Length: 62
Image 1 (cartoon, rainbow, N blue to C red):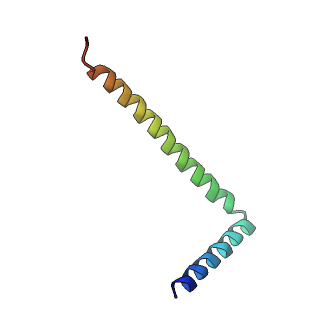
Image 2: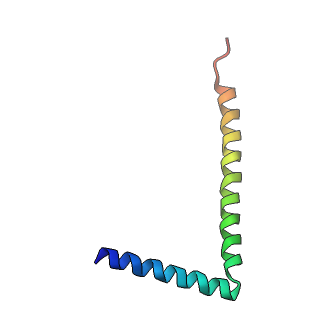
Image 3: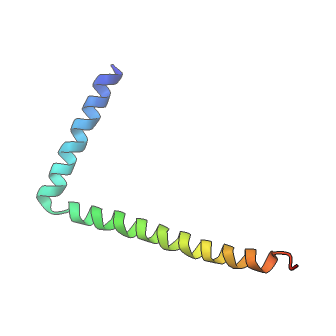
């Protein structure tokens, strides 16, 4: 029964992707995913930069 449900879910995903492709909406989905990933990357790099600055300030001086 679980295998049947997995196959059914995979089949619906393909049909949905085909529908999005035929309407040209797949590009909107791809652009949204790319924007979200780029936003996360920018956030992580900015966070890393701030953490490095804090680490430098808090290092004991010899």
